[in-house]
Image (cartoon, rainbow, N blue to C red; front, side, top):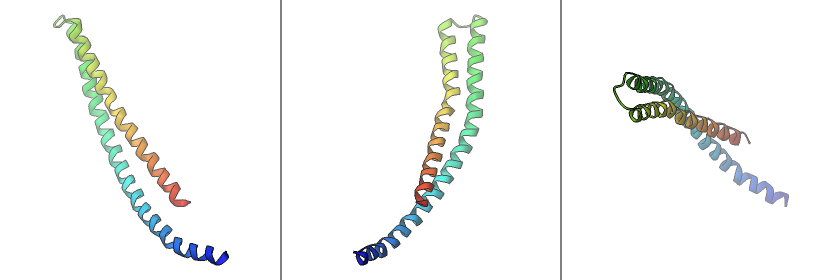
Amino acid sequence: MKILRTMLNMILWPLRLLIKAVLLLVIIALTLIQYTCMLAVSFATALFTLFGGILIICGFLIFLMGLYPVAEMWKMVIAGTVMCLIPMVGEWLTIQLTYLTLLAKRWMLT
């Protein structure tokens, strides 16, 4: 029985080493994708918040000046709010990538 276990370990050891080498490449790729997403989300957040804020302010101003009816104001305010919320999807994706990276690191250490 002990000989069988030793032979099984001799067969599985190179396989485990190969899996960990591939997993290291996956961790490096996930980390690069994660940092790229973080950079893109930070720039997108600034731009989308700026444009969304401009839409919201313009929506209220065109109503207060009497240029368009209330329905148009609400369309612009909702569009501006949605634009301000879009970067949250990117933040969620970045968090999920971070979670996957941590899971891969933990699995590699076991």
